Amino acid sequence: MTDLGEDAGRLLSAVRTALPDNGGFEAYPFKIANYNEAVAKPFQLSYDGDVFAILVLSTPKMFSGSFKPWLVERCRGVDATELASTILNPLEDYMKDEMQRVVQNIEERVDIYHDFDLWPNRKPKILMCTCGHLTGAAYYYQPSDLLENPWTDGRSVIGVSLHPRYGGYFAFRCVLIFPKVFVSPTFSPPRPLKILESQEAIKTAIEAFNFSWQDARFRDYGNPQEKYEELQTRYFSVPPAERWALLKEWFA
Ligand code: B12
Image (cartoon, rainbow, N blue to C red; front, side):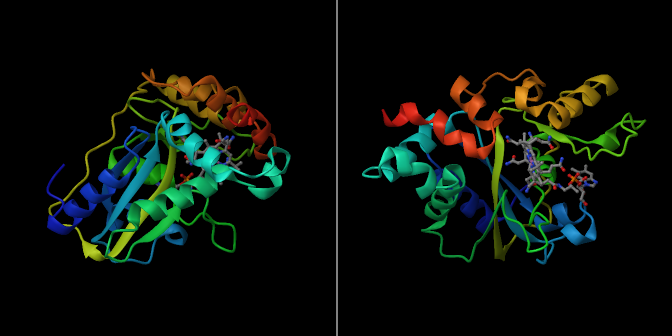
C-alpha cells in the first residue's frame, strides 16, 4: 500500500486501536474516488474524490468475543421473555453502539454508513462488496466475471465476496467517512487476493450464495482458515425473527 498521508494514517491507527481487541474486526483504508469510479451514478457518494474513508468488517471472533458480552450486559434486568420485543435487531444495535464508541474520541467529523443503511427509496447507502474489493479486503466475484451468463431466467443474481482468511465467514459492517480529511494523491489500495480462478468455481460460489444461502455452503468457498462457531452459522442462516430463540443459552 502506498502512503496514506499523515492525517489519514493517524486516523486509521486510532480506529484500529479503538476496535475491540479480540480480533473480531478489521479496518481497511480507501478514498472516495476509488468507490465512485466503480459504481454507477445512482450509488455514487457526494464527497470529494480524495476524501478519506475506512471500511470495517467483522471476523468470526466478533460474535462471542464482543457481541455476546455487549448483549448480555444490555439485557441485564430485562425479562428474558420480553427480549425479542425490547431489542428488535440486536446485532444492528450492537454495531451502531460499537461504532459510536470507536469514533467517540475522534475530533474530526466522521460520517458512519452501516451495511443496513438505506435511502428512503430503499437503495443501499453504500455498496459494501465493492468497498471490500477496492480496499483489497475481500475479492468480489460478480456475475460479470463470467464469460457467459448461466442464469437466463431473469432471476436477480448478485456477487459474493470471499476473504483470504475467512472465505465467506465474515461480514461487512460499516464505512467511516472523514469529509475533511484528504488522502495523499499517491495512495492506492492493494488489489484483493483472487482465490477462485476457474469460471466453474466462480459460478458455483455465486449460485451457492444466491440460491441456497441458508445452508451456508457459500461461506466455505476460498478455503477459510477460520470459521463461525456453530451457533453463529445457525444465527445467520435463519430469518431475523427466529434469531433470538438461538441466543437463549447466553441468558441461562
Ligand atoms: C439488498 C441486500 C440484500 C437483499 C437483496 C439481495 C439480492 N439478491 O439482490 C436480501 C435481503 C434478499 C439479501 C439477502 C442476503 N444477503 Co444481502 N445485502 C444486501 C445489501 C444491503 C445491498 C446489496 C445490493 O442491493 N446491491 C446492489 C447491486 C446493484 O450492487 P452490485 O451487484 O454489487 O453492483 C455494483 C457493483 O457491480 C459495482 N461495480 C461495477 N463494476 C465494478 C467493477 C469492480 C471491480 C467492482 C469491485 C465493483 C463494480 O457497481 C454496481 C453498482 O452500480 C448488502 C449490504 C450493502 N450495503 O452492500 C448485503 C449483502 C450483499 N448481503 C449479504 C448477505 C450475507 C446476505 C444473506 C446471506 C443474508 C444473511 N443471512 O446474512 C442473504 C442471501 C443473499 C441472497 N440470496 O440474495 C452480505 C454479503 C457478504 C459476502 N460475503 O458477499 C452483504 C454484503 C451484507 C454484509 N453485511 O456483509 N441481501
